[in-house]
Length: 324
Image 1 (cartoon, rainbow, N blue to C red):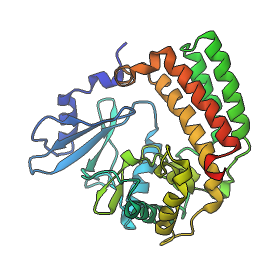
Image 2 (cartoon, rainbow, N blue to C red):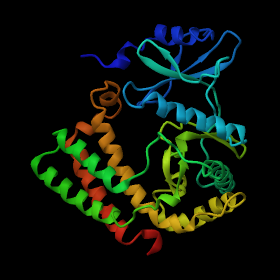
Image 3 (cartoon, one colour):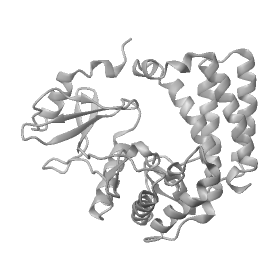
Image 4 (cartoon, rainbow, N blue to C red):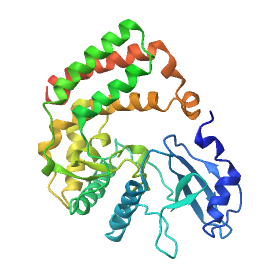
């Protein structure tokens, strides 16, 4: 049985845009995206557009619309984000064939440089402005970050995939149990949850000259504010986090007090992301784009490495390197 995205031909993409009276001047160019399909095209007036086709059966329309409305709220309050285009009826979520899709103005730029203090300060400013607005109300349809239950779901996805050998299964179950015990100690109070970008890594920040814009809110959710901050820290230099955090904190505090009490969540959040990311790859393996892009997932050596990495994270959960 073919995957739904296999029908997403260039002709279908252009027809979807044309259904909104936006006329591509040439074939669309596929961008680096796997969960959804994201392409760029130029219209007859020379304007560049991003067209995003949502993965069927992942999010309900209510969940997607809440993302769009959040982006519009942020844009209306001068937070640098890219809100989706709306038609004359005010609709931002559109349907063509079996796909929900949206159009966004193209945002050019490059990712910030983590070794540039001015860029870190600017990112702190952006995130402070984001959280000032996002804390004013809560999502009604989007997910809520639940680390302990989330890794149990991820564990089930991996184990039912039958990708691990017998000894790897035993080692994986053992390390997940240890991580779960640690994460259970780090429950986040509901009062600390705000609307977050959710996937705020360097690939989702674009700009130049210390002016940055947040893009791709597909994973926005209710989470502690530090969820949008920790991925701006270098993974290969935990001892240097202090200097990076200082710059981000100074920028953040141009708008809000920095959530210092949440810094202890960084290693738990990192562990959660490592586990969930691998489970996500496993769960999407029937999409032909994934075996092409991540062939190493089928290699037994990957799983040995992944288990070792999780064992190392267990040690970090007990004694974070940056606190040692």
